[in-house]
Each structure stands twice: as structure tokens, then as C-alpha cells.
Amino acid sequence: MPLSPAVKSQIEELIEKNKVVLFMKGNKHFPQCGFSARVIKMLNEVGAKYETVNVLSDPSIRDGIKEFSEWPTIPQLYVNKEFLGGCDIVTEMFNSGELQKALGVTVEEVKAPTLTFSEGAVKAFTEAQEAGTTLRIEITPEFQYELFFDAPQPADIVANVSGLEVRMNRPTAKRADGMRIDFVEVDGGGAFKIENPNEPARVKALRVEELAQLIASNEKFEMFDVRGADERAIAKIDRARILDAEGEAQLMALPKDTKIVFQCHHGGRSRAAAERFLKEGFRNVYNLEGGIDAWSQRVDNKVPRY
Image (tube, rainbow, N blue to C red; front, side, top):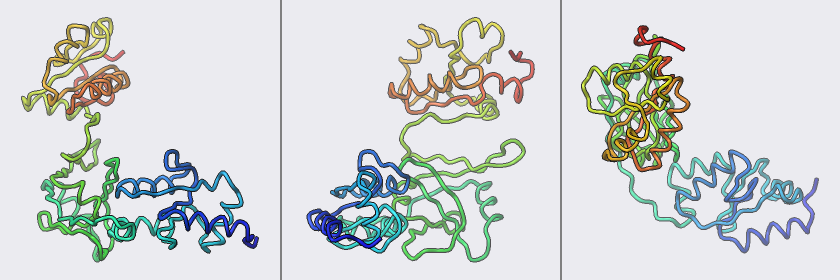
């Protein structure tokens, strides 16, 4: 359908009066599609001042902007009256620093981060790597991690870890400094375990096998059972103390960086307790995944199941 003069004029006015404007689904506070939300996060991260146009509120704008820009998808970002692109192009520009330049934001120098890989991780990466590829790490603003092999990109930040070339985009490099990657055996297979000092405090998952190793290591930690006395009478892990009023008082008196493990029957109640104490300021909080039931099945079958 041809773009009407009225809609064309409306779009031109929006682009003219706003230095940075994003045509998107939803608005900057409530994005209504994943691609729009991704661009919003990037704009927020670089500290840009921008306006948004919700194309869902006006079908003529939703269809018209596609005709106007000759671009078939939403979102669409305009800077200084110039159409930059959709989500994929904006992401590439963000990763390379070109988006920051286009927005007039100072592009800070980003150095290669210091990374540590265990011998097991190096071995696993080396065995998985194919010719012509390089190990790539991506860390989202929410500190979700992706490890994969890909072709090198010109704008990559490059680190060398135990003889392995590791590539990443600029935002990842800023989030990765001091990160350690290990490779651990899990249920007959293997998985990468990541420790990142830059990651905001959140509840960490602890497998029952890891708890057994933790107990055997004599490392200092505290453990609390959030179940009631009736369930503890049936089955318990001796290392855990009950989180009653006295237990909670003892917990609250601990230093905020104390390593604390929460445990219940299957892991649901303990996770809720762990989240609660995370909000109290504790930073090294773990939830025993699968609870005492998993402990009985995979570590100590002398502990009764119920």
C-alpha cells in the first residue's frame, strides 16, 4: 500500500524533532517484543537520550515506517534524521562502538580482560574447536553467558588464555575481567562452571555432589534447613541447622559475605529463602538444587526419602 502524504509528513516530523528516535513495539518503559527490548537495553547502556514511537498504537505508522525506510521489520532506529537499521544492525554497531559514535557518546577504551581457564576447560575447548574458528564469549547485561566457536570479527576484543585465543565484543570485555571458567563432571557428562566477580549478587545453584565436595573440603560455610521440625525428624543433613527464630538470628549476625547454603525437601522453599536473604544484603548465597531428596538419591542413600 503506497505511503500517504499525511503519514509521510507525520513520520518526517517525528524524525525531524527528535535527535534519536526508535520506532518500536511498545515504549521505552514497556517494550512489547524481544527485538525492541534488546535495542532499548543497548540505548540505555550507552546512556543515550532518545524518544520512542509505539507502532502498535497506530497501524498507519506501523505500516508507514516500513515504506518510508524501505525496511521490512520493527524496531527501526533513526539518529540525526538518518536511518541506522533494525535490531541486528544496531547490535553490530553497539558491539563495535559505532553506535556510541553515531549517538555522540564517548567511546571509552576497552582492554582485553584477564581470564582464567582451568586445565579441564582448556582441554574441553581445544577438543571442540574446529579449524578456522575461534572461541567466543558473550555476556549479556543480565550476566547470561554464551560460549561458542565462530569466525573472527574485525571489532573483536582479543584475549589469550592458556594458549587459546578468546574473542568477545566490547560490552562483554568490560563484564568479563577476572572471570574464571572451569569444566566439571555432571551426570556422566560435563558442563562449564563460570565464576565472575563482576556479576551482581544472585542466588547460585549448588548440586548435591558439589555440597558433598564442599563438606569434605573443610571450607568454611553455613548451611540452613528451611523445613520444619516435623520434616527434619524424618530426614536431615547433619551439616544443616534449622532456620527457626534462633537460626535466623544467628544467620542475620553473620558477615554479609559468608557463604550460605539453603536446603529444603526439593529446592523450592529453600530458593525462596535464599532470595529473601539476598535482599537482606548477603552476597554469597546458594540453593541446594533438588534438596534433601536429591541428596538421598545421589549422595547418601541412608537418608530416608519421603
